[in-house]
Image (cartoon, rainbow, N blue to C red; front, side):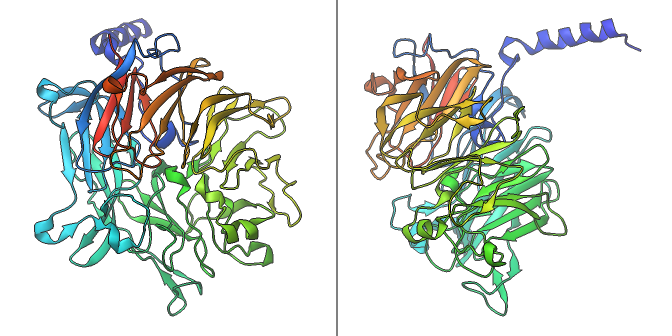
Length: 534
């Protein structure tokens, strides 16, 4: 039997054998870093405001991709790849239904090729990504729609969960894949086709039921993993056709469907897309979603939740219990003018010690911010929004992006606007009514969802992509970094040395990933890696 002293000595030996490169490394296994969707990496000790500048920091290398990658790159350190050793790995998905695993630190020698890649299409068998023309969306995306959302990784069983969209001999499918992160091999008997049918009388109903339509639906929001379940949400692409919003949960080990929620069973629309952000989850495995334009009739005894922030409990009996919701007083105006809440994902704030222990922040296209008590969300008040903790009307120019959180600041990047920081006062339990700092640069439509790196509460850096040229195959994206406590202090821009640092053509809504001294972004043709030059 090993005593306490021997056990500590053994741990020390393991730590030394692991090496400095493995010590304290962070994983990024879900969109915006955690299920709260804060966007913060609090273990970044390499990149600091002192060394992130055009002299010391820049583009290190890039990796060619077969197509657009809308999903946020995910990162896992010290992955043992069979016959290839141990690597820090970055995982990237594309609209051509391909999943890549790249070495995260090098593109030379044995790392010149992907560590593995999986292609879910097979044109010889009539299986392709879905042609965009089939989806009736005029906004340039790419020629095909395959994997549109950010996957999620479970490092306890080395599995990455991906939703791929395919056209198979004239039929449309969404499939949930569970892949081994070391090889790309399918696990748990996957993939499984995503299907559902729910009682309802709304748009598209037949015989008192609404059936999931894999051609009309769009799987844009990131996946959520909690309570051993993979959560998958759906909306539309360009508001075309008789679509509805859906939320589904699947067992992560059997891939069987555990629960389904149809958001507007007796109405229409009600998408969950959130600018690419995913449903958020709390410590009790409750789930929070922002619902876009659609029928809302709950105040009249109905069951349609358009234009609302909704809290759902863990699945029970094949359904999600609806625990709470908030709907703005002017939801009908929002709905008529396409000023939906669901254009923006939400962020759950860390647990507070005051009256409101659990809070969330939500934005919308109208330029409003909502600070909501997630333990009592307030439901609907026909006259105003006084039932919530704080309503900041018209503080920005509209959010097609999501808030981020760090060290009592909420960061937003509205369209055609500066990135702004709003301070949160834990004693007053309120946000500042005006920004405490702003960038001098403005970010055109659709704005930007920022990510934050920090060493705990120090050395905070706000990272942002300017993707406003996404409609052009030649329009360049740009990467920016700002001091988190003073956004007017610009630390770095890829435009300063464009010849060296140009990332390539932009993609709408993409988000940077910061992990262990490097920044990973995707463009129309590449995964691009930035870091310290020396």
